[in-house]
Amino acid sequence: MPNPKRRHSKRRTSTRRAHDHLVAPARINCSNCKEPKLPHRTCPHCGYYKGREIVEVASE
Image (tube, rainbow, N blue to C red; front, side, top):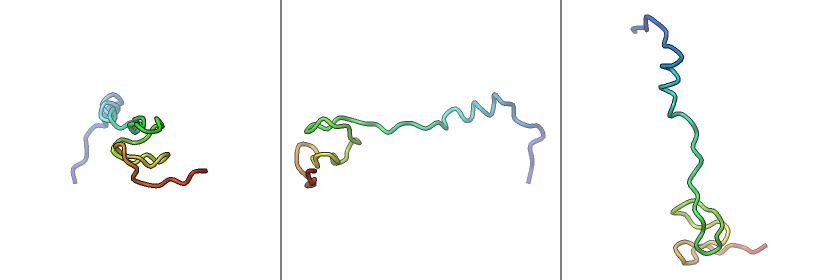
Protein backbone atom coordinates (compact mmCIF):
# COMPACT_ATOMS: atom_id res chain seq x y z
CA MET A 1 0.00 0.00 0.00
CA PRO A 2 1.32 3.46 -0.79
CA ASN A 3 2.20 5.71 2.11
CA PRO A 4 2.34 9.50 2.17
CA LYS A 5 5.82 10.95 1.66
CA ARG A 6 5.21 13.95 3.93
CA ARG A 7 2.96 14.52 6.90
CA HIS A 8 -0.03 16.82 6.53
CA SER A 9 0.28 20.24 8.10
CA LYS A 10 -1.84 21.31 11.07
CA ARG A 11 -3.78 23.71 8.88
CA ARG A 12 -4.62 21.05 6.32
CA THR A 13 -5.74 18.65 9.05
CA SER A 14 -7.88 21.21 10.84
CA THR A 15 -9.41 22.38 7.54
CA ARG A 16 -10.49 18.83 6.79
CA ARG A 17 -11.95 18.47 10.29
CA ALA A 18 -13.81 21.79 10.20
CA HIS A 19 -17.19 20.06 9.65
CA ASP A 20 -16.73 17.32 12.27
CA HIS A 21 -18.24 19.29 15.15
CA LEU A 22 -21.38 18.29 17.00
CA VAL A 23 -24.65 20.09 16.25
CA ALA A 24 -27.51 20.37 18.73
CA PRO A 25 -30.76 18.79 17.53
CA ALA A 26 -33.42 21.16 16.21
CA ARG A 27 -36.20 22.01 18.66
CA ILE A 28 -39.62 23.54 18.09
CA ASN A 29 -42.37 24.46 20.52
CA CYS A 30 -45.40 22.21 20.77
CA SER A 31 -48.52 23.90 19.41
CA ASN A 32 -50.61 22.50 22.27
CA CYS A 33 -48.53 22.86 25.45
CA LYS A 34 -45.68 25.13 24.20
CA GLU A 35 -42.97 22.76 25.52
CA PRO A 36 -39.88 22.18 23.33
CA LYS A 37 -39.97 18.99 21.25
CA LEU A 38 -38.28 17.43 18.24
CA PRO A 39 -39.91 18.28 14.89
CA HIS A 40 -42.19 15.68 13.22
CA ARG A 41 -42.62 13.76 16.49
CA THR A 42 -45.35 13.41 19.08
CA CYS A 43 -44.91 15.74 22.05
CA PRO A 44 -43.59 13.72 25.02
CA HIS A 45 -45.25 16.13 27.49
CA CYS A 46 -48.84 16.18 26.24
CA GLY A 47 -48.99 13.43 23.57
CA TYR A 48 -50.29 15.69 20.79
CA TYR A 49 -49.15 15.84 17.17
CA LYS A 50 -50.58 18.28 14.61
CA GLY A 51 -53.42 19.25 16.95
CA ARG A 52 -54.61 15.69 17.62
CA GLU A 53 -54.02 13.52 20.67
CA ILE A 54 -51.95 10.55 19.55
CA VAL A 55 -50.67 9.13 22.85
CA GLU A 56 -52.30 9.29 26.27
CA VAL A 57 -49.78 10.70 28.75
CA ALA A 58 -50.22 9.78 32.41
CA SER A 59 -50.60 12.92 34.52
CA GLU A 60 -48.40 13.05 37.61
